[in-house]
Length: 275
Image 1 (cartoon, rainbow, N blue to C red):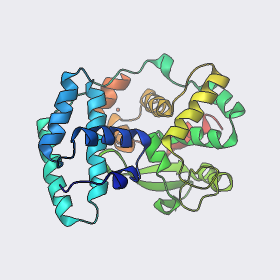
Image 2: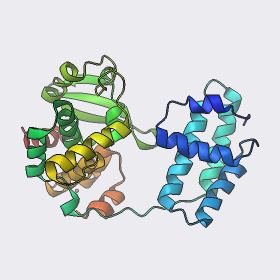
Image 3: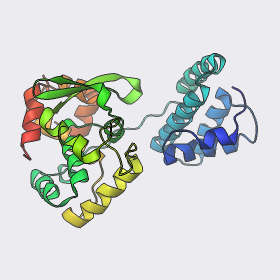
């Protein structure tokens, strides 16, 4: 690929963490051209230095994601990136065994009710949406009003999940109706006080702060996804249906949550547990 300008990199519309991962790789090039060999060499060097597979996987994802954005508008660059991506994926295999989730780590129903009483309104609505849908935090933050269609008691949202896969999720209309008066954004469902898209970093900080203050322990947004999956499995919902709804493989769900059709009733039941 063509040599990149630092000014273009610094303006990438990605998270600070992703940008830092890409900058670390970019600096390792020492002005040389980006190639699949350069990416592979960078990742393998870090692996030899003792960096975990989980971190290396995040590094690889950030590098390829940033390159994808930088290649937009150039057919030649996009073709080169397709080749680079294929070679890198084939050459650097990163297996991250899923960590088993302990039930004591999850958010209990009593904790959720306490959180819903004492947290600020904006955070309560975010928590309630995560609790009800089991979305990944970045999927929640990327939800736009234009992606929703009213279907009776629910709004069906179309979203791009992990690996750019298209998924459809349901959210109770009653819950969705509470969002616009609070966040007041015509674009994203969840916005900051300026009406701009809420960042994952800001979301993490809010949950961490109020988790300690209200529940006496740190709470992170992804914990709601773990809690949702465990709750649905315990309710006897088919693993295949949960897998499709959440965008995970059935094997991963079994290995992580140790617990087999995802119906609209399941979403409403999860929502009404806190209502």
